[in-house]
Image (cartoon, rainbow, N blue to C red):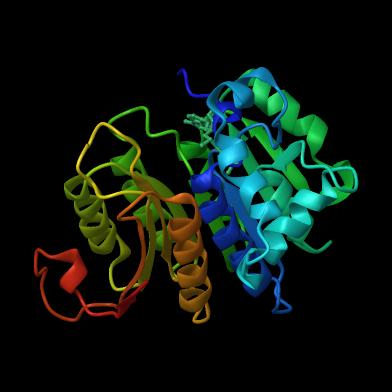
Length: 296
Ligand SMILES: C[S@@+](CC[C@H](N)C(=O)[O-])C[C@H]1O[C@@H](n2cnc3c(N)ncnc32)[C@H](O)[C@@H]1O
């Protein structure tokens, strides 16, 4: 496994993923029920944008640095920006918080979190970064298998973030399989899956398979396309797909993907939010045609 998130931390894809994640956390901690969060592919937790990996790609500078400097950034990014400020000295922007730090910062004492990371070094770094008293558990190992075990032991309010590197061809299928399993364990679980967008055929096939696996649960797909999808070898965009999304997520997600497309994209960039409502009939073969409004 070659993937190191340090090269990509704070890029446009992290901004989309994390601005939607922080909103999910805000909504799911607004009710009294204790929340469990499972992060299947957690990473190192905190990234140094001044380190060689980040400087080499420049992705953090082209992403979070521009968001923090923007005067027109909408309130939809406020929770993410506040989390960035919390891990930095006043006025500085050297460090970027990964999903575990965002989760840890949002949870209450009664909530629980489980972070899975396959790499020894990143799992160790993550253990150092997370506050001990938090009710957070770092599991060094395979998130695909650990997530279902953790979901079996969790109370009703459950959020699962699935954020694999997509280096392996079967990551899409694994994400669909795990979602189906999680929903069998807990029908009301919110499951958020980050995916790259290179070509539309791959993404639409994934959405169709996920909809089948979701068995009538509603889905929200928030897409950022940085450019028209003419070269399938490039990372042309990304999506956060949320199963069982809270009602207020649509407008938030639309604001997020629109801002990123408009400010960080190239000519022809676009944001798009699609809600796929539970279907009553058979598979139409067109995930975009299955109920639900669209915007962005
Ligand atoms: C995209 S990064 C995660 C970023 C993190 N979720 C965030 O938003 O800050 C994917 C991570 O998954 C880890 N990984 C790869 N395969 C894994 C597996 N089967 N189980 C758990 N972690 C895995 C990689 O080492 C990498 O750190």
